Length: 349
Image (cartoon, rainbow, N blue to C red):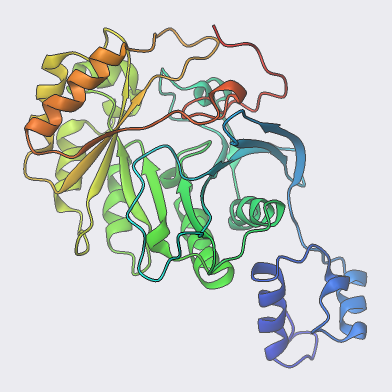
């Protein structure tokens, strides 16, 4: 762009740094660019395209759910979770002080979702459209700015687990990852992407030079049950999915994460747990167990604490690390599976 305007190439780096590192909202604020150049950019119709905040809901536990709107009026949701995402916390990294602030940002890759998992409120929206790389990154920059985050001081994790299936918007998702690494300064080791099981893209993802960690949304222990809960299983069944998982090239000390939403008297039995053990045999993996987070129009119930513990213990006795994720932002519909662009809150049953 700058070469076409007759400018020197290093102006591009100055602009890049201003947008992604300094998180400036307006071109007029970029003091490293000459005033005449800033005026030329503005008069040519350029602007920095942050999403706008339609609504901001704050939970009793400090979680913040953002309902964000993009330039064409379409919307998606992003969640800020202070302290983490409700899963197990990693040990303090080398060089981190005890005062380091930790948080996780859950971001969307699509507006709505086409996968249609039966236990997820986002599925009720259907797919509205894919988000662009800039719209994906814009969620992160906006939230970092809203909370005054200092990259390099604060420990920020990103999870691509909001609205949408990232691997059905793969090219934009991977471009966003590159921008977040090179621009925002967040290493890919602090990012995790969750897929419902888009098998061809799992292979593509494993070949990427720069990639987040991989989580696979399992949620059922056999094909019959997974067909009912996750229609995507009819296209890529458990045999295909587990083959892709076994072939995935893990880095040293890396594990695949399998996410399992527990539904009372549907997929939470001892037999289901034993079937999961059989599925994961031979894979360097851990399991995150998630009790169903309730919501309107979801025809399932949250399992008992006893059922969750029994399921976890069955996995752990088989040598599979299993963690129970704490629900975050449950009172504001910000927990896993609850993102439905709700602008008003209905009390939970």
